[in-house]
Image 1 (tube, rainbow, N blue to C red):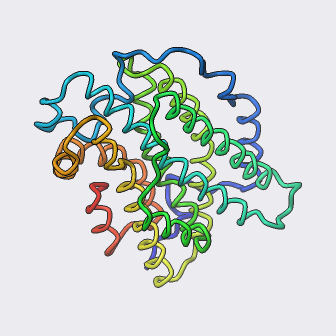
Image 2 (image 1 turned 60 degrees about the vertical axis):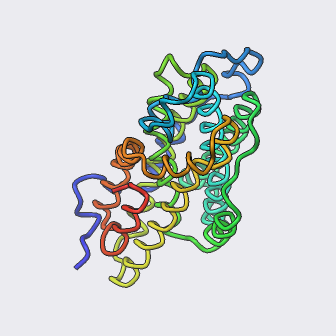
Length: 304
């Protein structure tokens, strides 16, 4: 029998309107305007990484050791731009799912108002990410066409616990990465400050998504739960596999075929992905949304 999420010790479901009111208060007290907080006119240092080097897809491989320092800098700038491009893609999916969920709901409720506040935050984040990649002189990286097509279907059809757990996938994993980037003095200032903005504001979004996932998952049938587990795992696979566009390797003057192969077999990278996935995996397990074939799907992309 499926566990009751209401019986779980952590996380807990609280009153929806109370949560909305608290998150609205937090938004009013601590939100950022990237157009003001980020010094977009500051020069880009030549000797700082685009992200914490340990988060590079090639760190720990023979290829990384063979690269010049300048190539490492270039690669990490393109990698962070690729991750941000994937973030923009999924934030646009997120916005549409949240708006669809709130359609024709009671606009006087705090829950509704925070949902729209979240959409506004995500719009600012997407522009912030886009401007960061532009400052680095990087292209607008997007997932491969097949993933974009599947994303269209997901944003149009996903609802309930699948939609909100899907939202958590990108937010939770990026949160762990960015907490490292924002504290690392080896990383470009523009990435450190945009990471800080994203971490602070996404904390509210993750709280909202966790509670909505639990509410929607409560009382599901065994078949419904199994289907939801599979859908969330598939979405996770698409997001994780899309973070690093293979074109980043060519941009750094590398052999793309070899780089893709070494990144795929990079045990250090696999461990970093598992590390960043731990909060999400714990939550899904506590919500009884992790089990059966879905475990194998997570293992394929090193989330378990």
